[in-house]
Amino acid sequence: MSDNSFQLVAIVLYMLAMLAIGWYSFRRTSNLTDYMLGGRSLGPAVTALSAGAADMSGWLLMGLPGAIYLSGLVEGWIAIGLTIGAYTNWRIVAPRLRVYTQVSENAITIPSFLDSRLKDSTGFVRMVTGLIILVFFTFYISSGMVSGGVFFESSFGYSYHTGLFIVAGVVVAYTLFGGFLAVSYTDFIQGLTMFVALIAVPAVGLYYTGGFSETVATIKEVDPSLLSFVATATATGVISSLAWGLGYFGQPHIIVRFMAISSVKETKQARRIGIGWMFLSLFGALATALVGIAYFKQNNLTLDDPETVFIALGQVFFHPFIAGVMLAAILAAIMSTISSQLIVTSSALVEDIYKKLFNKTASDKHYVFMGRMAVLIVSIVAFYLSWEKNATILKLVSFAWAGFGAAFGPTILLALYWRKLTSWGALSGMVIGAVVVFIWGSNEALSAMLYEIVPGFVLAFIVTIVVSLLTYKKNNAIDEEFDETVRILKEESR
Image (cartoon, rainbow, N blue to C red):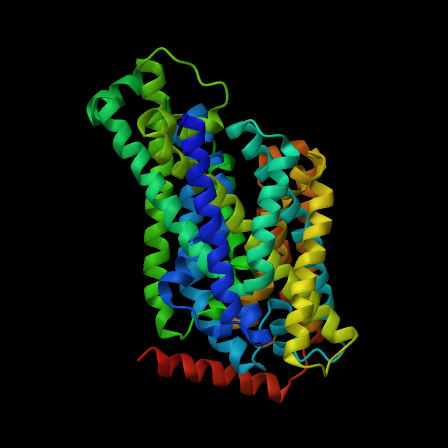
């Protein structure tokens, strides 16, 4: 059996496992809350790892190690920013969002929560938020499919379109049938796979490079600054990297996990698991790159594409079947993000647009069916967009994290902690955040100087507060829900 065959067997077994989880989740899905939010029944471990897997995508196994391999630990500031942001998100958003969404008409999507929280009689907030999610995530999903096609093309020599069909087919199948439960359970397995792979590669790699001291000495031979966080850093560069953490407050596919956890008390344990997973996984990504620098230097080898350092080391250090599992970890990172974005987009399409405009009184069975149709429709559009490796799609993704973070982040935080937030304030802030990110990010000089999420987030926050103060009118229903949320949180935290 050839090396390639062993690796392919590992990939096939992984994909069959994902489909099996999809079937299991299908059997457990009976109503719309089940399909869109898993019946609010997720345990802390599944919540934590599914949020992490949905967050990181292929960046954790390819983008970050590649950046460290090229530039050294100065690129590690982004990992620090993300860890701080994720911890803060778990700390201040997760418990309150879990309670508030249930208190406020049992909202099961971010748009429906904002609609209910602000008592927006026009439905404008819900529609605009749902449309933003629908448009941005359709392109985001498309870029994930492109990554999947390229993965099979570069790893197994398949055509790009064959890889595209395989990845899209499997992800769409388990998401369409199993809904949020399937996405969360598969993300849990994918998170574990990524974690084990990122710890195993640098741990075994140290044996091949002669241990810790020898590895450090070899890296210093290449360039001592590779081991420094500050040697080649600039103030704006560090701020831009740390600012990635701001994005967490507005990512719908991540914060929806907070709404699905079984209870507020579980959020503390989930936070510990999630941040532990994140810290060790990011550490593993950094260590993989550094071990790669030492290994290729010691063996007088060159790496054509730095982003493949994780793949290259896995193939050198392990049996071909285990190397296939390493490849499955990359595929897991890609697929977990696609599936999470698919279910959030489906939720926005059905819960926030279809129900609001066309059919408010149908049965849960009908809405679940429409949810599955929404997954299929969005998948077909994303698949069509990904048929050609279109650079404009991939470029849009570079705006997406900042766009969601700046548009939704300030609104989510203020909705949870400030009772005077108004519909007009929320809408104004979302529009300003998205527009500033787009304009700033489209200008190469500005984006090179400072990551666009910084001005976008700050201006959106200010505009949201100012417009809310100008349009605020006391609403007893809003005050009652706000007070009830605070009361439940105090009881649950005892």
